[in-house]
Image 1 (cartoon, rainbow over the protein chains, first blue to last red):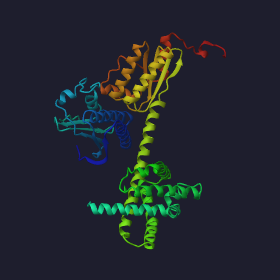
Image 2 (cartoon, rainbow over the protein chains, first blue to last red):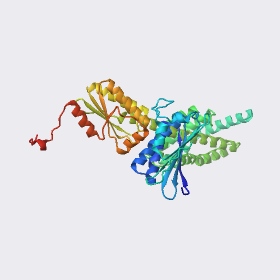
Image 3 (cartoon, rainbow over the protein chains, first blue to last red):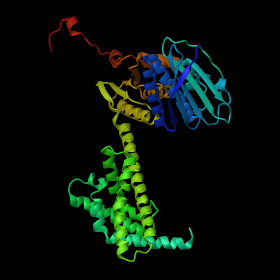
Image 4 (spheres, helix red, strand yellow):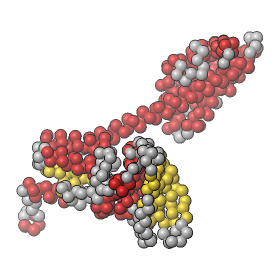
Length: 148
Length: 298
């Protein structure tokens, strides 16, 4: 892949339900500006909604940083969700569909991974969680990297 | 603060309080010309002066009680509403919070001049200390105005949130035994609770056998929204009504599949019209195309 340049678009707090709506709105706007198709937009917004809710519910609040990427051929959006919560002890299990520690459907993390092009998660028990997702506008190379 | 300086400050506050009380009329006249008062009270000069007078009075009380640094001082209670109205009015006129704070600060010079003149007439002793006291008092006023303005904003937001919760969810009777709920906006937990309640109520009062949940106006369907929908469908089913989820756009459909949400147990349709047709068919109602059957006008 060629050199990828990034431009910080925004850094939003995730502290309440209302912030979730704000995050969705921001992602919608950023994705539309970059030139995402309607389907890609919807997928990314939904993934962002899931991850932001995880940050809020499981991480006890945190923030999301959005960066507009450009690798010369295509543009994309990178979202990084950070919290200082309890972390995830078993990432594989957390990514399994149907597993939940809250009262949800247990599809958030695994579903979000399927909705984006790149997905990585960095967590240790007691040291918070950082989830990074990248989505490229249609026609871009889509390397499937699932790093830990 | 040492005991002595505390006593001095108390004494100084009383002097300033006296001064405010004594010169109330003059100060009000001067303040009535300041932006903060002039632009808010536009009906008559008398009204403006009266409003300024009320504020001077309140400041005099605060000073007399020696609580010149206390934003919560009881002396401010009487003018809080007026200040909130003034701040709100300035905000509506496009003034930023910083601008409003500046306008409150602009009240200081005219009153400070008067204080200097007033004290020079008397003995001229401790003028500096009294000026400091006055500055502190007006600084506190500035904080009070900002605080009042902010809490007024929060009140409005809270009220609007409750209004949204209540207003946006009508249950519509489409046919005998068929009701529909057009969902619009974000479906958070609080709102989906309202949706469920109003839907179940309508199922009872309208004796509905079919309930259509239309999600055309829901921009994002994530796993929580899906969960809320499925709970609502399950609850309606327990009451003997079948739910149909309609308004599933292509992008939403793909997203739901990728998320891995299983809506297999729920009847879904692309549009509200399809959902209605399905429900009518299930009820045994037949819609006849007049042109095809050659019927005359009704």
